[in-house]
Image 1 (tube, rainbow, N blue to C red):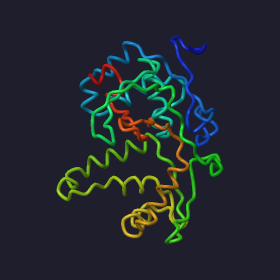
Image 2: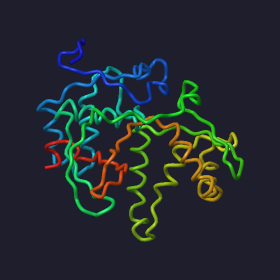
Image 3: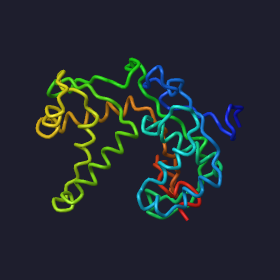
Image 4: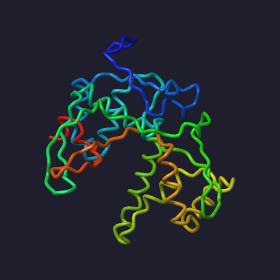
Length: 256
C-alpha cells in the first residue's frame, strides 16, 4: 500500500503507455496513476443492475477508484484503461482469477486459474513517439500518407454512441459500421487534408482493403496495452495463446 496524501488507502499503478502520449502538463505524463482500494462503495457500483443494463458499470467503477487529481477516465488511452481495470481487480479481490476456457484441440470446457499480476504489458515501438498522440503512416499500395491517433476512452464512447444510432440500419442490412467509424475517429488527415468530410469519403470509398490491413498491423505494433492472454497447454500437449475476457464478469460479485 502506497503512502499518500489521500484520506483513503491507494496504490500506484504503472501505465503501459509510460505516459509518453499525454501532454506534459497532464499528471498522466508521469506514466503512473494513483488508484484507491475498492470498498463497499465500489461493490454497490458493481452490483447496480441499472448500471449493468446501461453498460456503464465498469466505467463508473474506474471513475470511482481513480485518485490522481485532474485525471478523467475519458482522457485515458484504451491500453492504460485496461491496466487500471486489471489493477483494480487485483486490489479488490486478489490476483487469482478463475477462468473457463475451451480447449482448442478437444473443444472441451476447462477450468483453470491465472495470476493477474503475471500479465505483462505489450511491447511497442517507442521510436515513433514524438511527445504527442499523433502518428504518420504511408499506405503501401495507394501511397497516401495518413496522420492518426491512438484512441482514448472518450473516443470509444463516441464510437459506441454512433453505433447505437446506426443499430436499426445494421439490423436491416446485416452490416456493422464499427470498423469504418473507428477509422474515421482515428485518422486525423489524409495527405495533409484534415477536413472530416474528406477523411470520411476516403474511408468509405478509397481505403483499399490491402492498405487497411497493413494500417491495423502498424497500429498494433505501436499500441501500448496489457497482453490479456495466457499460455495454455492443451490436453493433448499442444501450446496455445488464449485471450481472456475483461467484461463485467471480470469482477466479483458482478459476474455472479
